[in-house]
Amino acid sequence: MSRFRQSLEQALASSRKGEGFLTEWPKETVPEILRLLWQAYDRLKQTALCQIDIQQADLQLERSICALLSDEIQMLLRESGGFASYLVSHERWEMETLNPEVSNRPSQYDICFVWYAQRELKWPCEAKVLKTDGDVLPYVADIRNEFIPCTYGPLSSSGAMLGLLVQGDCHAALRNIALKLKLPVTASLEHSNRPHACTTLSRTSPPAKTYPTVFELHHLILHLRPQ
Image (cartoon, rainbow, N blue to C red; front, side):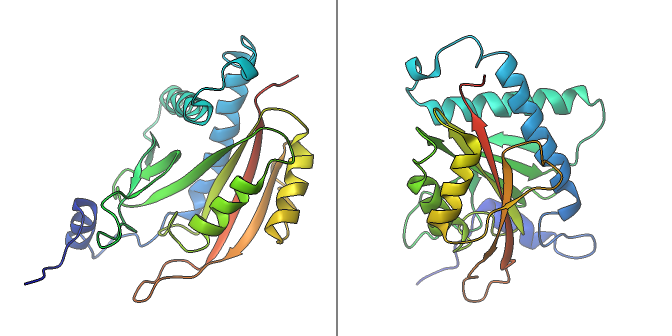
């Protein structure tokens, strides 16, 4: 006899539905999260990235940079002195879109922010190393294969892609992403001094799910060899 299967996260979410229950990530927190990501990168430029030649340290580069960024964000949150409504997590699982009939391994974010009171709510950041500003196909593939089908960020109406650029021009990378993605990539007004742009994605929600289908994806290009 078959039985309904769900993760602990899903069971906990079902048990507390009612007054005060959030169905998606709170939009008002997104500007602060984006500032934290840039502040963490600025610290990384002044510490680890200025001490080494990144081309001589390319083993597990994506994982290493994301771990360091997560550490810096955690320290920034601690230094703020107040209670944050979310946590930062490196390589966190996404249980909401786990399909045990396909695989027992859920999707995993490089970095994500987790809502403190409802841990099933996550704001996703996916990172991809760009060896040059034209090396954007794997980056675009993640958008098409993970974000658009709602595999990543199912309970959020926004998220981020982090382009970890080894060599080339950050703004050229953004232009190449727009060409390959075949969607408008618009410069962020709030971060106009940064290689930061946005794309509005039209997503496909699975049957019987009511995930947000209009999704704002932020592109942050982080040069790993800052001048």
